[in-house]
Length: 115
Length: 109
Picture 1 (tube, each protein chain N blue to C red):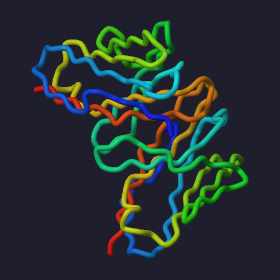
Picture 2 (picture 1 turned 60 degrees about the vertical axis):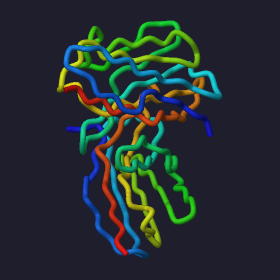
Picture 3 (picture 1 turned 90 degrees about the vertical axis):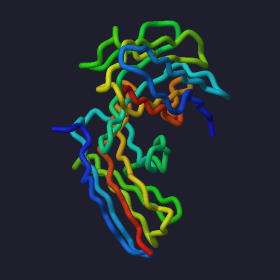
Picture 4 (picture 1 turned 180 degrees about the vertical axis):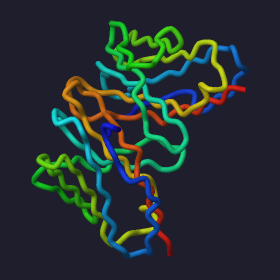
């Protein structure tokens, strides 16, 4: 099946720093990528939808200035958590969709711990 | 009320048992439905799509009831390796996936 690579898999940072997470589709062109966040024992919550070459669409309650999303090419989307704080510690997962196909392929996730 | 509701469990069953999970969704405009499996600290992986006609993949059977807005997953002859969290997922007509909280299954020897 299609492969989505997410990097880094794990990051620890100090409060106030910014963290960039990359999501790449390795063998297909991802016109749409999605970013999710999952807190312990909770479901995945969609943060934003990003379409190549256009601005991301954020879900209600997600601060677009805090979670910067860039989808500059058909194979790469990045999520930058700016000025991270301990409450941003979570499991961040990206997914990618090829064209209008119904299936999304997930990256392995990034575990962010902010001290 | 959550858009996709599941009993979080945990369901503790012996090897070989048959176990069923249920899920309800509130948005009648939802277009497609899935079960995903998520292991601890890992990303979700697609288990199977769900159709009104029902579909089966080995020991797994999924069923959709659009009238009742209800989705089910049946696992027969449970294996230790089936222990995981099972996520009920609904695809809105916008293409967004909405995840349920997940149901945790623990299969014991």
